[in-house]
Structure formats: C-alpha cells, structure tokens
Image (cartoon, rainbow, N blue to C red; front, side):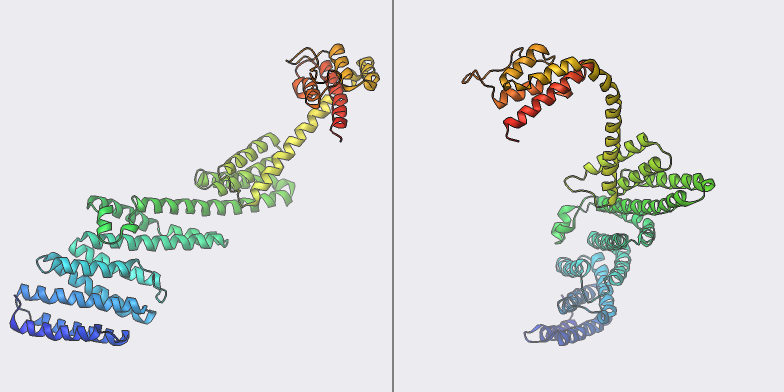
Length: 463
C-alpha cells in the first residue's frame, strides 16, 4: 500500500498523463505533457523512503516512459529526435533493470509494456533516422542493460539488433560488389570478422539460456526466430568474402595474362606463370562457394591452357567443367560472358576433332571407293527401279549386317508398293552410325547405299 503523500503525487501524475492522451491532443503537445509526468515521477522517486514506494513509482514511471516512446514512434522520429530518443531508451532500460531485479513490483504489467516498446524500436525501420547509427547506439545501451539484469528478452532483442546491423553491412557489401567496387566490399566484410565470431558465440548463449521459438512467440517476435541464424549469416559473409577475393585475383590474373600476350617473348613465360598462380589461387578461394565465380575462374584457366600453354585437351576439360558447373544453376543461365565463351570453345574443339576425323576417314575412303567402283556402278545403274524393287535389289546384293528382318518390309494393303515408314526402316539398316564397326569397305558401301536411299526418301516426302 503506497503512502498517502505518494498516492496524492501519483494522482497528480495520472491527471497529466490523461491530459496527454485525450483525443485531439497533437503529438508535440502529447510528448511535452508526458515529459512533465516523467519529471514529476522522478521527483517522487527521490522522496521515496521504502522499497515498496520506490517500486510503485518506478513501475508507473516505466509505463509513462513507454507512452513517450510510443509518441515518438507514431510521429515518425527524425534525426533531431535521435539524441532524446536514445536517452529515453536508456532511461527505460535503467528503470527496467531495477524492476527486473525486484519482481515483486508489478512485474507482469511492466514486462509487457517494456517488451512492446523495445520490440518496436529495435526491429522497426524508421526512414527519418540514420538507422545504422541509431542501431549501433541502441545496441550499446542494450549491452549495458543485459550485463546488469540478465533478462532473456533484453538478450534476445540485443541479438536481433546485432543481426540487423551485420545483415545491413552484408547487403551494403553486396551492393558495392555489384557496382564493381569489390576491394571496398572485401574491406567492409573483413572488418566484421571479429564481430561475427562474437555474434556466433552469442547465439550459443541464446540456446544455453533456453530462449527458443516459444519465447519469441510469447514476446511478439515469432517472425524473427530462425535456428542457427548467426551461423547462416556468418556463412553468407564467408561466401561473399571468397567471391570478392577470387574476383580480385581474377582481375590481377587477367592483367598478367594480357601482359603475357603482348610483352616481349623473353618476358612472356614470367607473366604467364603469374597469371596461372593468380587463377589457381582464385580457384582455391572460390571452390564450392559460388557457382558463377567458380565458373569464371575455370574459364580463365581453360583460356590460359589453350592460348599460352597450347594444351587444347586440358583446356577442353576445364571448359567442360565450367559448363557442367553452370548446369547446377538450371533453369537459370549464368550471367557472365564466361559461360558463352565456354560453350563456344567446347563447340569449336568438337568441330575441330570432327574435321580431323573426317579428314582421316577421307584419306582411307578414297582408295576403297576405287576398289568398290564396280559395285557402286551397279548401285547407280539400278536407280531406274521402283522404290520397292530398288530396296529388294539392295537387300539381295548387299544384305544388311545390322539386326532386323532379312526381307524388305511389304505393305500388306498394296504389295506392289513400299510405304514411307517401311522405306525409312530400310534406310536405318544401312545408316552410317550403325555400320561403322563392320569394316571399312562395308562402311563405305553402306554410305553409298544410304545416300541413294535417302535421295529416294526425300522424293517420297516431296522435298
């Protein structure tokens, strides 16, 4: 039971608070009246002689302080408001520390008031404030309060504020990287390594304190609870740092590569080895971290082996690795030019191999054509036959060596004709790809037969 003098004082405070919250009162006047109520409560606080009276005053003070914070929030705080806003937050935390350590003083109602205010001011984005500076200042005050009262809620709000700060810095670094300022981005990320380690340790303490999803939901923060949140953020930092470092090494490697292509022959190998070292170091940093950047590094190494070391087979293997890596992004294609370069290089390599194979085969084929000239003449002399007769002639003179019927398929509705479908089956029996392992002479003969049959089939289709 509060003392008589205290009850009268609290009644006076209540009148001021009611005048501040009545309809029609503007936000500026509301804040002035709430400040006046806080000053009156501070005077009452200094006059308290018992712990019970002090608890009563501080409980009411906390509620009025929260109302003042709410007035700032609804009015949209500006940069000019930030000093007072942070001061009021600090005062709220100081009062709460005493109440938390003395739970007999209206703990439940005070707890609800504090949580509503801190949750809103810590996790809401205010466009009128310098949010980075505001959050850093708020974090300092939460750290001080947390050391004094060990409140799991204060600890959790501090954890979320730290996450917002670190996540914001990560987004800023990503933005810088996107603008080509990878050195600045890397510097920003490296500057947060110690803070990230400390943040990860804080998450372990959160688990130790038993703060989980249920507690977050009770505090109205359920949407913010994510298990292993700190470790996930730390991993994102590591990936982005690796991307920045690999990009830096790629840039230096490209400079050395260009020098090796344009310098004096005596210096060429020195620049080439420097480029190779840069590209390999970039691959070590980025492997398994980011597909886009790893693909770009592999493409550079492939180009290095193709143009400087003159090792087309190794270059082809590296280009293929890069393309296979890009396939993991499907259905989205990589954004960099490196992917198109890899596809073109692989196609050019395959075209070159095919041309070489054709050249070798042509050298083998010409003598065989001369040897088979009588049979090829016999084939050409039979061109006047109908499609069915021509098919039977071929089956008789050069029986197919592929699996299938020994007789030409006949159309049961018209035995004097051969359908397009049946004729296509005849062509397939002599197709080059199915007859490559039957000996060179038969391969050449099947090529000539296939040409003759295909020409007739095109006529049948009206081509």
